[in-house]
Image (cartoon, rainbow, N blue to C red; front, side, top):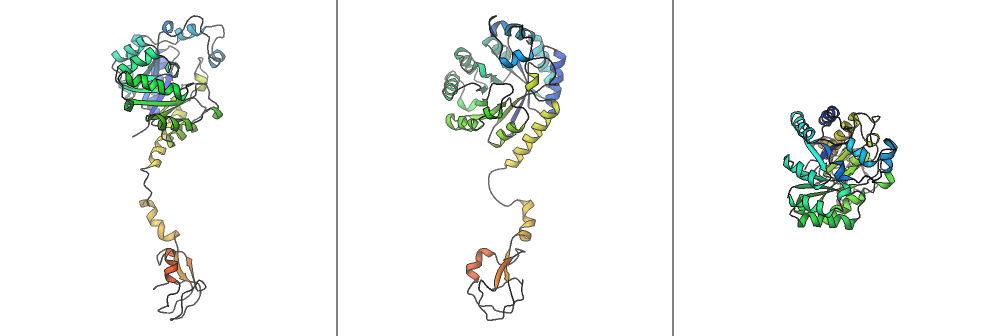
Length: 333
């Protein structure tokens, strides 16, 4: 199964429909499967006393509340419809994380077949139950979560009607950017083993190497934030890839997919031509007269590998030479 690559535009459109469309174009050009946004109404998402995360405060007006910031970053219903149509024209799939039940219902009404649960909702029981009741494909981000919280969320979704086989859990560290020491990529594999689900990685590290490593470890989904320009104002731009970096990451992922192969160890067709060149045969190490006994002092192993294999060394030693051999001549029995 090919890795699904989600190009996470998130709120990097800054509330601007033109910028959002340019992000879709960039996602398509990079080879992503999905261009992903965020669906919410600020008044349903945060109270007026909710504070910003540290990284949000550093990159936006410090006097602005989280609620005020979120209001600037909303996509209207009409904008959603226009972006879906634009994705269809660009031949890239539209995806969005719904942050509340009403937003989930709206996305469902638009015909989405895949629902992405953001990390912040992994402990939101009524929300999880509602998503599970839709019986669709679910991708669950697990930033900030313990193994117990992941298990509880999977159980709620499953009991609400979505089979475990439809659930993919993304390992994630909810910090922007994520320090390498905080990645703990091995936890992705642990999640899959513990809960019998497909796994992936939602990457907030700088660069691309961790996402590529996650694919080598078995990730079936990679999600990565991207922007047109890291210098744009807004909370997430600085921790996002720019278009050429996104393109490079996806190309590397596709190369790793091919390189992983089918897991069966055997000589490849490209190797066959080199086998006789680099392997060895049993050869005479000095002149050998007919009737002499082959011993470790008069035979050795050298290239090419077109004669008797050195794996038959014990079978050759002690045998009688049937003819004369010159030094470096392939031994024959």
